[in-house]
Structure formats: C-alpha cells, structure tokens
Length: 233
Image 1: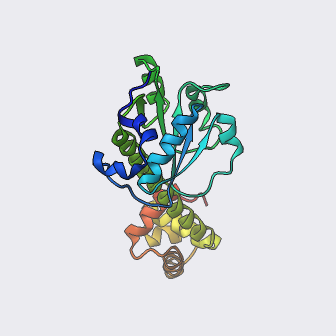
Image 2: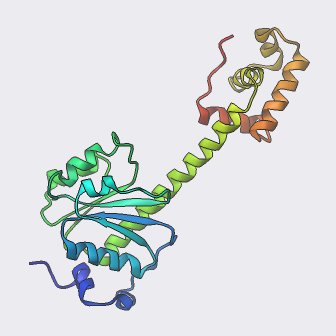
Image 3: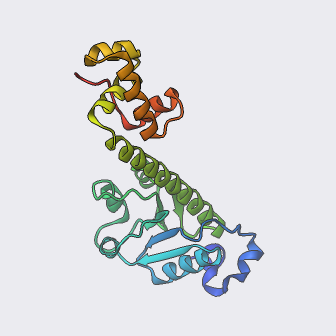
C-alpha cells in the first residue's frame, strides 16, 4: 500500500492545500511536463499537483502513446515511470537520443534499487524519485529539469541564429572570417587569399557587420560556437 501522505494525498485534496505544505510556485506557465505512467491515479495526481503551481502537463499510459503525440516546441521535461507495459521506462530512456528526443528525464518507481538508479543516472536521468515521494521533491526536480531545457533551447536558438548569419556571408567573407578568427593577421590573410590587405579589411568589416559582431573577440567566439576552422585555400 502507498502511504496516504505526501504525494498520494494529492488525490484527496483539491490543491489549495498546496499552500499548507509550503509548496513553492514554479515558473513559466508555457512549460509542459510529459508524464508517462500506467497508473491512472498517479497520472491524475501528478497533473493536479503541477496544475496547482501553474504548470501544464500531458499524460500517457505507455511510451508508444507518448511517441504518437505531437510534441510542442516549448520548455518541457519527461516524468517517466520505470515499470510500464510493453517497453519499460529504463529501456525507453536508453532510446531517447536515437529518437531525437532531448528532453530532461526524471525517473520514478515504487520498486527501485541501487543498480536501477545507477543505470538511470548513467543514461542521463536528472533525478530518480522513489514512490511515494513528497510533493515538493517532485516540484523541485521538475523545476530543475524545465530550467535545463529552457537553457538548452535558448542556446540552440542562438546557435541557429548564428548559423543563419554565417550562411548569409559571401564565400570570400567566409574565407576571411575563417582565417582572421583562426589568428591570421590581415596581411597574412591577404597573402593566403591573393588579395590586397585593404580588400581583406573590407571583407572582414562586412563579415563582422553581417554576423553582428561588435569586436574581433565577439567574432572569434562566434566562430568557436560554429566550429569554424581555418579556411583551406
């Protein structure tokens, strides 16, 4: 039997009582938590708890049901039970990368042991929650996971913007950017490309403007993020 306190008591209280447990409201109402658990009472309880702090959730009985759903483009995480019909949560976790799913994962189980926990954490799980767990423990884990996914999405967006700017450069501007950010002086780049130093300076200025780099240091950092090496000419 599960304890009637902590998380499972959520089923018996309509969550204004969250205030009585000092549950800290979380962030971004645009965030979404995907919950995969074959226990309908658990799915309802998790959804109610998350809703009480302003977080949306989508619940699924199986991993296949989750895969069949369309995943919205918003900060998200995956709350995944270990024991599921069909593919287990641990097996599914191991396939997420190959499936192109990059969501932070929080594992949960009522039947955990040390080897299971180690396997989940080595596979990249952010947290491993034994059932029954405290409401705040779940909320803390979800908050950390959503923050991580938000940072990843921000980083991915910035990199995509840099890539678009770089692709907007002419071939000469790319060559000059590659050489200059690799440490070549203007006159050295000019020699490598068979151009005058003044022409190289013009291409460099154009590249910096299109990349929206205020300084050479900014341009170097952008090249590092884009993994741009020295041009082969």
